[in-house]
Length: 310
Image (cartoon, rainbow, N blue to C red):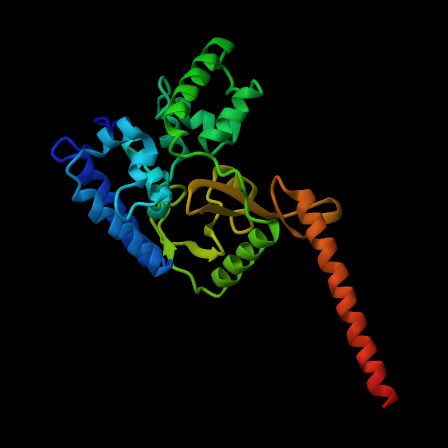
């Protein structure tokens, strides 16, 4: 439900509220050069939602996300987004398209967490998402001065919030192969370096409101990707904003997830681009590429030798 601190829908129905945000997402995706078919999909879904006789919340409460999926022009992915808006009054995907995704705003949705505590959770625990915060609390991590009792209260509030959201934002069970993620990272960095990508105006760490953050929307098979430089407090602190690339991905069934690609600074992958959390797969990927390159080089050498004998 949307409260007074968020964009109020008191003067219009929830359907209008959601339709407007779907249209805004379509406009932003078009401006950011995303696939025209995806842009059209959001616009068609907005029209369908606005034309409904029943309120979206009623449909969701009675039949769940599956009932939203049965609305004309609304597939599983958009149904999950509609459910997230109806249940929380926020849509993380749209906030990211706007360049206004703030972890602190997300954490303020947790019952009992205000702006100051939300800021401390983000900065001291170095977490960006509800799922990352959940993992940190499960490891008994907490900001300085937050005792066990209060940490337990935060965890309880987070569990309650996730229970409401997870049916709509079921975590992706499958992820793209590391080769695919590394290729998206390559495409993003190459196009950003050549100034071929649209730029957004991030709200964080941007006091002059400059459009400096390149954004890439790309598709590989069933996967949809959005890639951006990491505009986090930690990235700024370490001077790695231009090196760390955050890649968000989802398929047509919803369930968005993310990975960060960085340049490794030590070990066997030193100076290689790696997907954080999937380093062992990256190592196997590079070893396989080395074998292929060696084989190709050998074939080339053989051909040159043959030519010499001719």
